[in-house]
Image (tube, rainbow, N blue to C red; front, side, top):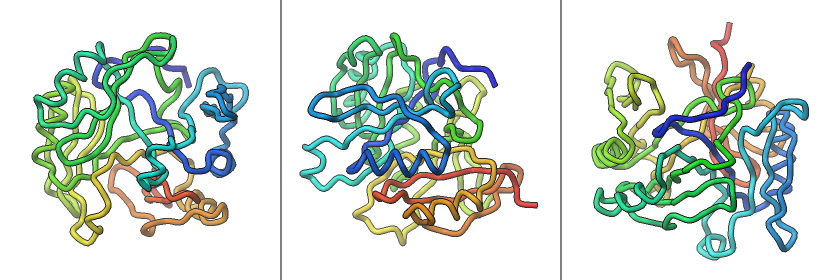
Amino acid sequence: MSEIDRYEPGQFCWNDLQSTDPVAAKAFYGALFGWSFDDLPLGDGAHYSMAKLSPTRRGHVAAIVPLDAARRALNVPSHWESYVAVASADAIDSKVSELGGLRIASAFDVMEAGRMCAFDDPSGAGLCAWEAKQHVGAAQRDEPGAVCWHELNTRDEEKAEAFHCALFGWTARSDAGGPRPYTELKLGGRSVGGIVTMPAQIPTRVPSFWLVYFAVADCDASVAKTIELGGQPTAPPIELPGIGRFARLRDAQGAVFAVLGPTKR
């Protein structure tokens, strides 16, 4: 498949894993998705490890980075972070508070790669905005080992929907016909993600969050491989009619992600 060299403002463009054990995380995801890594030094022996689908493919699909000391001190667990492409990180940063969000990191330069800001939406889910310079984002999507979907799991769907639509120019379309209501987010008619209300049985200590889906060739095989590598499924695989077979998983350090493969035959 061809490589992506540009993302429109409002499209999800990148993901990185903030990990309490990046060395172990690289071994886990490398074995699960077949990733190889290019390690960019961060100082003090740490690296920003950029994942490739194979050593021969151009560009990267995601990254793994050590969870910073400040968040570790607050017992923040390993987690995947998502980035949305924007024309101006400063403009997004200035709108977050007026729309009811919480600014976490004001706009700053990431060397020559780009400029970004980080924030929580009104329901508490974290997200980053990315103004690309030398790094546009993931070079591949929607193929095995690459990201294929983003889904906001929230405790306040109404506020979260209004916030993100105003911030990124998304529109929302709700569908109450499935096993539980689902809201699809669109940008100019193109689907970019979804929103779902978190089930009441999930403990309140679990904040709202963006769930990252990775495409796989076989959902059940990916679940079995996850268990073999020390991770675990949080629920059995589920068929999504007209979409595929899905499972939500937890890696060996506790970061939650999902895989989506073809319907089981």
